[in-house]
Length: 305
Ligand SMILES: Nc1ncnc2c1ncn2[C@@H]1O[C@H](COP(=O)(O)OP(=O)(O)OP(=O)(O)O)[C@@H](O)[C@H]1O
Image (cartoon, rainbow, N blue to C red):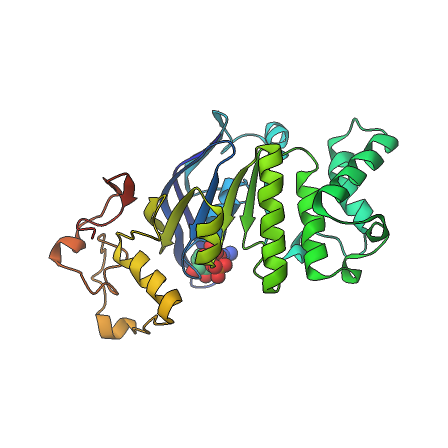
């Protein structure tokens, strides 16, 4: 359904002295209909940047995104609009997608209005149906975003995202701002909606337990690259970074290793992105590492354990 090839994003910041930051580097990805793919990795590794490129909110520096075989990257806005209802982003912060001056009903109606071709009665019936799907009641309709709880607000965002019958939802830390019980409720609700509608789901999270519980496949990102990908990544981690990430959660043991302690990387270093922090590094790790198939999993390490 959704396919990304060799995606790369480079941010440029600074006015006088510009600084370039490669946030995502050479990511290949494929999501099948009805599949849930979790993307995990530490803060700043490029998960949100990847999500934005998948939903066409951000143009990649290079690489392409395809939906049902159609290349979305480089497509004119007029043509792209036809696909935009099919891929929806649920962001971490609902405030980024809701207008504080609009009632909940108006916000959820908006996609139908923009899309056009719906009568007032049809929009009203569709909104009612979406409200019941996400567990909001009629009393929420006339409220404003600030009159909703965090969980209700996120349900409103999900209702809006479901309006135009998407085939893929990209959830970028969609529950991380909520308390634990509400997180569980929203995740369960998303899984039920996914099952009912046959949606593909990209689930970006810091919560490894949630990733394991909901996903069919997990992608581990580090420094803009996918370093490991597979079905049983958490039970049988092969990449040193995946093991460090799991240990950090299990034993709260993420060691703080200062870059100066590990030695600076030589200019133009093109070896393993985890080289500086990896306790198992050897000289071979200074060479570029490709994703390799190791007993059904993909690992970006020449000596996976
Ligand atoms: N607009 C921007 N301009 C410059 N650099 C950016 C910009 N947006 C993100 N970055 C940088 O790109 C890198 C990846 O950021 P991104 O938000 O994708 O990470 P993330 O894995 O989603 O992090 P988190 O889990 O904390 O949300 C970070 O180093 C970040 O500082």
